[in-house]
Length: 269
Ligand code: NI
Image (cartoon, rainbow, N blue to C red; front, side):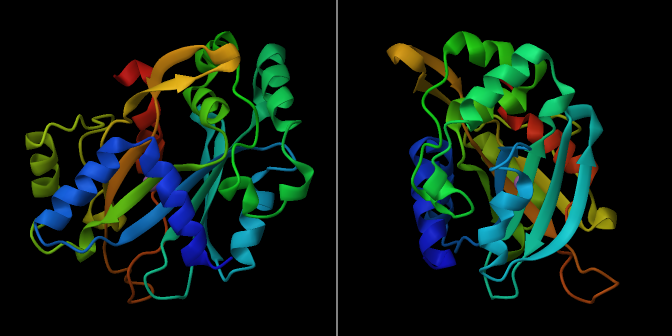
């Protein structure tokens, strides 16, 4: 499967549970914009066979090169970013939760999920394209995870899939920057992530980012129990020229990413 085929499948899966992303996409196209995806974010647990490196392997095999390593001690996460030499191929941001830093109950629940990952999908993109990687989690287990990590709750409920896609502000022609774009999104009625300010980062950090809060959708948990929970969100990123390379900055700024993670927090909504 080519990268473009993989991303089409992942995009369809993502917008199916993120109606706001589809709506924003359409509203922008109505203004005459052509939307370029800056980056795709994937989340995982640091347990084999789905640790960060295992998830990254099929993407490395398709030409992605590591462009940065990040640590989020407060959220018990680490991450790597990847860039692809091909034109118009999105950056990839893969994070993993350090499961060993959580309570025994938490580790047991997560272990039961990871044990279900189909053997034949291990090390392939089928982990993402032939979902879900595990059966629906019990709602009370979801709540147990949420108490210790919002990230874990999201990942347990939605399994391996795109957490968010990102509109590249560099390629937009009708907005004039990330701030006017945010104003427009607010006018259109999209609730924004304001953790650490509406715009995270600055021209000095070479990357400015903002995001809407995750959509809330009705989702099915174990035994057919349906609950309304935060799903995925859409992000917006503007990159600046990196004086070291003369090209656009290809990494991420950890303090901003730290706040962007909170777009799926249920408490933020
Ligand atoms: Ni992002």
